Length: 614
Image (tube, rainbow, N blue to C red; front, side, top):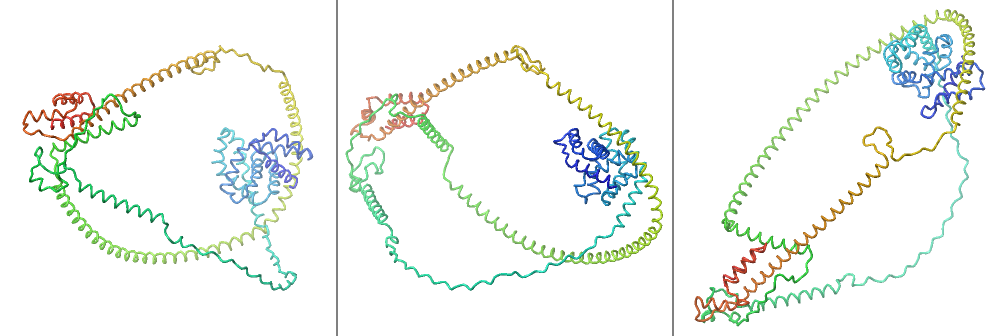
């Protein structure tokens, strides 16, 4: 038992070192054989055989061991994973070669509780014939799995069940661990030196602080600059009020309300105060500018801004005229309707508030009733719970009594069986010892044969390695001739040679250059069109400004009717005041022509209406 127990321990140690991500099984076995050369050839052969088998059938073994940890061995540590793999390999592949007695010795050499759990899980007929068979069939063929692995395991079921029963008895016969009371530590006092009494420290002298300067009064007073600013503001306001008063007293004659064209009479002159007396005004000289000459150089943003301003003013004036034509009037009817609607909304709000108040009262009463109903239901539920707990307590007491009776019966049966088992155990031990001796002799012969076969295999591998190394040392041609006109021939779509690729790249560069030139020409044409539009807009703005200047100048010219002139004489007197000596009809025709040629006709129409008034 100790012989095979040590072998199993060395196999587990080697499996713990194996890492499938980094190591290959062949190299790992070679390294393990070099490490195990100090052992005897029998041990070395047995360990290498088990180790190679575990590595070869690792997927099959992992299926069983992983399921064991999930279903039955959740309390077993993960450090025993390789131990269960080795036992599973021996039971599946080496049970007939080793013999059942040797397998039992190997199992007994391991921890009893772990082996009992694993063997009971692995040799369960339900597990073997159901999911273990299905999982192994996914890796190997179903017929091979059934004939070579599942059927032999099912044939060994009676002996294995007997072994499991023996392990269970060994677990029950193990004496419980004696709980010895731990010695309580007795604390000891520390041998410390007695501290000396501290001396009273000498008081430090109180430092003398120099007197601080008082805070200046200016910090709590506003600065003089604020007062001076307030004074200047008041003086400026007084001056502005005086100037406004003088301007109101010296009002101009044009502010006097009277009928158009009616001269001032003596009665009206008497009624007017001194500041409304008529004055003789000089006619200002009218100056006209040519619209083609732009007085100020404007940038693009200023031109577009001024053009949009004129266009917006024209649209506003047209909208105002349309509203007047449609009959726009005062808002008295709208205000009355608005007051009515507001009063109606107030009444609806009051009614809605009253409804909400009543609904709040109803909801409060409903909440009180619901709370009372809940308290009654809770009381009923509490009574039911109390009755159920009392019934459960009675049932638990009955179950405990039945369990105590069954335990007493089991103890009596076990004591009777133990008396008869000792004689049978002695007979079995004698027969098993003979079988073990025979199996040991057979296993030694088998181990020798396997060692010879392993040596031959090792020689063959060394020969293969030497041949491979000789092939690697042969010289090879590294250089490669490249034909740039040849197509690689990989079978890809659009495959071409390097020369054709260069030609196509040159054609692409030529097309890109042409597209860039076309884009550059389009940008230049767009800039020219934009500059032409801005120039046209500047001309229109200059025409609009000239028209506005003319209309303002004509409004500022006072009408001086000639005494004794009526009808055509009055018209002649007005014509003499027009600039350039043009007649009224000529000015009207000029304005109509400018209106047709301009994009802002509103100002010219307004100017034309002013001329017609004159």
